[in-house]
Image 1 (tube, rainbow, N blue to C red):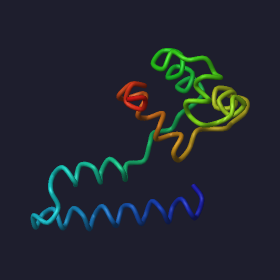
Image 2 (image 1 turned 45 degrees about the vertical axis):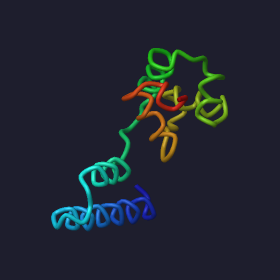
Image 3 (image 1 turned 90 degrees about the vertical axis):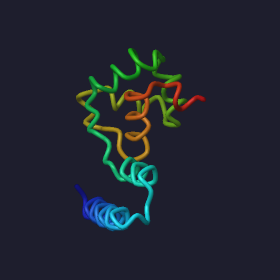
Length: 110
C-alpha cells in the first residue's frame, strides 16, 4: 500500500466514523449511512482467475467488449487476466468489477 493510499484509507475511515457519530444522534438517516458505508468500502482484490470468471461467466463478454465496457484497453484486460503480468484492477476499475460481480452487468447498463 502506498503512502497516498494509506492516507486516503485513513481519511475515509475517519469520515465514516464521524458519519456514524452523527447517525447516532439522528442527524444522518439510515439510508444515507448505508450509502456512505458502501462508498467507503474498499473493493476486494481481483486476481487473474477472478477477473476471467467475472468477464466470462457473469458479463459473458469477449476481452475487447469487456475492455470497452470497463473503459480500459484490451491490453489492460489481458494483463489483469495474466498471472505473469502481476497487474491488478484498482480504484474505479475494482469498484466496477465489484458491482458487476455482486449485482450483475445490468446494474451498469441500465
